[in-house]
Image (cartoon, rainbow, N blue to C red):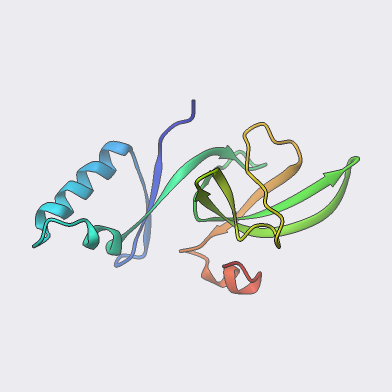
Length: 135
């Protein structure tokens, strides 16, 4: 079973924070209490929440939704292709956004097909999205 962890981009402060589930619930409740209509809309405008995937990259760094990763594929021990993609959540699980140039690929803890390395994230490194045409 994987740890339930969150990383949160605070829009106004332009800072990344790491939260527990308790932190997330507390902040969301506070935001809803301060909202005139009791909605959580203002919370999601100020905080961009990303969940830990349960995966680690080749440098043992935790991979979160919103991370931009370099993925190298190997066939017969030889690197065949390298892709730069962002991690997102779909109904089927963790995936790349967009699918690898049209190739759907589900991230799996036991996948040995690829070699992932975090090179940034969509909030702190938006220039990577433009450079590598990541959506």
